[in-house]
Length: 140
Image (cartoon, rainbow, N blue to C red; front, side):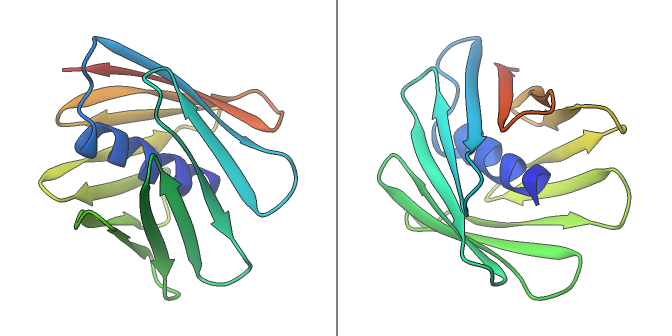
């Protein structure tokens, strides 16, 4: 689920708020509860919360959204600005995401880093064993 939440937030950052600079850095931190806190160097910030069901609720700079999985390999995303899409994992190390017209993959090869490869940006998300995941993105 951590990889999925990361992919969703990264996707929205790349689609709804196109990278205005060549690079963007951020963190996603969970202190042990049901909420993950996101903060990025371009002043994007927000939360992702799951109360134990199949839906995760997102908030990012005034936008609200949900990511819902009904038990299959696809999670459905919907945001208050009309942005919508899916993330699908077929059991491997790659999650395939599509959000409006943007698409790409997030892949983890078994280490602490997930590699994002999207049509308009790329980057990494790394977790070194703590409660914080570190993001680094660049525009294409």
